Image (cartoon, rainbow, N blue to C red; front, side, top):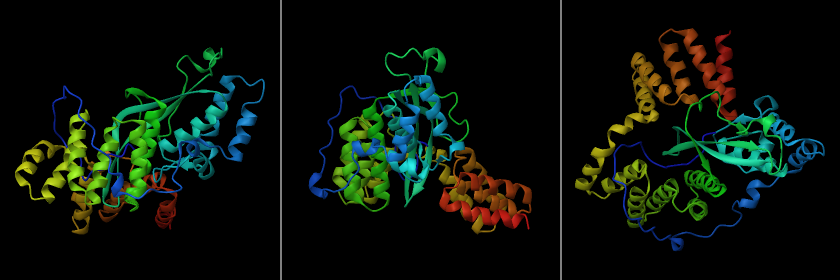
Length: 376
């Protein structure tokens, strides 16, 4: 999965700000504007094992099994051939991910870490500095980073020669899309902050602002310098009518974050809504070009071209969207529709097959029915 680092924005941006020489002061959290929630996910629940998971760890961790053997058993367990699937639709705790045999990369990493810890294996969380993953839900753009996990023999083990001196990396992103990218190690606090930031964004999309605020507070308590969480908080404030506080947060992120473009764009939206057009124009000049890196920019144009009956233009625009983000089933389905209208039936079928493979379970049946129509 690509970790939902969730920089919630309305389109990608471009620009460059100078690195501050003095650390900015963090905005005050607005507890009074939100209602405390009950039943929220805790760190303990996040890593809790269910009976089936415990049964696996008992067998894999039985006396006589080396750490290398335990690692290989765990790697085999979480593989596609054992029924586990990449599903970017939700961030789940370990037990739920195991039960459903599906999850985004953060969910699958947490599940694997929970099992590895029970097996007394070493765990290293890793951020892959690959191009971000884009998603759009409920009118909100979600820009997602990708994380994976490295399993290592426990302290005192002599199994390094078996599993390799650098451990065994498990990556849940389909295919080989992360090869060659720089890896940054994450502490457990940093990884957990990203997990709770994911939950916050998902609850914001679902119209649950109190839950979103709760999880953002957890994320920022774990990693106070996480720009994506602060940016999401600014979005939440603006959606709740706290515009002055939202602006303070956006400006804080712009001073704090080495990649401030998402907060810059969110600030530009706020300035435009307030009629502060001179300030908006100054900021907009910095961010306009980078919208071309947003795959949904091309997808939306493709949909409009298709609806006008300009299928050749739609095909070109769908291709641009796929080139930027080939992991979205909707983009491949758009390609399939355009190819079909242009009479390129083999290409249409191939794109539809790709869409089905990438789709979450809820959409697979719809694509399967369309594929059957090709064969009759």
